[in-house]
Length: 472
Image (cartoon, rainbow, N blue to C red; front, side, top):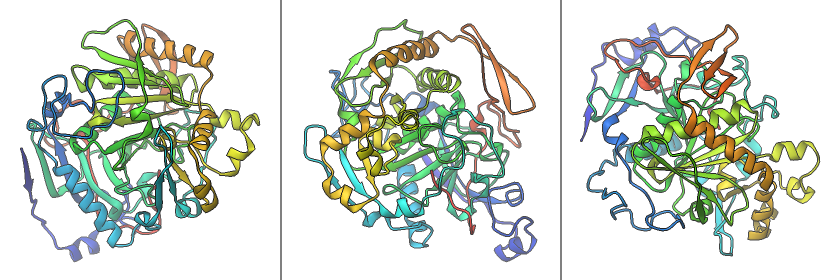
């Protein structure tokens, strides 16, 4: 059940502008956020936590659903999950920002085609993203890097680029508030001003905590809830680590709509044996796909899936192994893809023909949606080209087997974790598996009636902002 609530404004808009402190851009920083009232969407935690809807059944040949109304293997059906309000809200707000001219180009005018062949690779010509996207501002050989407030980050974004705050409700009912106070450090859903596809947005967990680009259990669970709440099989979330073509060192996930299956969703898989943990998460390995990777699938709860995948990601981060993540099937299936393209490029091992296209194989490209920057490349693109590009990304068979074993051990054998923070924003994590370094996992300050201990307590979005813009 969803309700829409309106919170009365105490002062007029003109009075707010006259009295508002800050930099004059209505940004998301501490200079402008205090006292702001912005849209807020809260989701029912219990409802989405039990959401085991899958896009496939029976065989290991997984694919995106053709009929979203069927029951899954657990007996769940869309009649039990008929909330599509977030989906409609996101698209309505995104189109509003498009009408207001906040994007750098019209992504709906970009040409797209499916490449002939058995795998269904999709090519898009996006010259605007090539010409206007923000350049990378940090080292590409380090997966974990400290947050640098001097470089672009999402606290510098104008509030008008934000669609809404996103976080858990207190009564397990999804609700939308047109204006709500900004408390603590909110989770923000904002447009990507250099979009790849229709509805391209960013999910920025705890924006005011200024977290570097690295996954932890809380942020990943938030991303799964976002996918589940959207309740649309064509809405996927992606994550790029540093070294795997993330361009901003401020924690964020990307998401957009593509009304076609990604080739990776249709790729055959084989079941991976491992020590089963209580609750259970099924794991598969991609086969007959140019990039080697693991596929995690929900069994009983979203929390189990989040814990397994995030623990594997934490291992990769601490071992300085770049990786990409794709969240599909309404948050019930996750692809984990370690990669080595930047490393191979630095060693001069990538084919020059591939380099000439200037394509950076991040999560969307690896999944099979190839964003091309030059018309010539678009017109000449073939399935063979797409396969060759992605093959340059993949770890060797031997290296992948080593990484796979370590990821599964981290995912299912890590029983406890103690975080010891230091003054540099890093911390030492002590677990049954040993000791390693990672970035500090900070907790937001809770105010008012917020009362859960998850980092998803805080939330936020807004209106107005000039100059600096969001992009992934």
